[in-house]
Amino acid sequence: MSIDSESDITANIQIGPTSLGMVRIYIEAEGIDLPMDFSPEEALEIAEELTAAAKTVMGGK
Image (cartoon, rainbow, N blue to C red; front, side, top):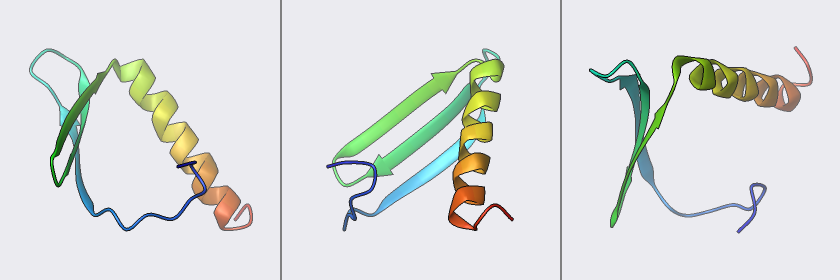
């Protein structure tokens, strides 16, 4: 599966700070519990990538 492939998988995502000063992205789907911890700097880079992708889809608006 590539990033541009459609999927029928349904998942829940939660994002928040941890007690250790990290930012956690937690993904839960059928048979999957995936906690991913990032430094605040890494989290900001991910946020920038999400913003850039959304702007690309919206035509740069």
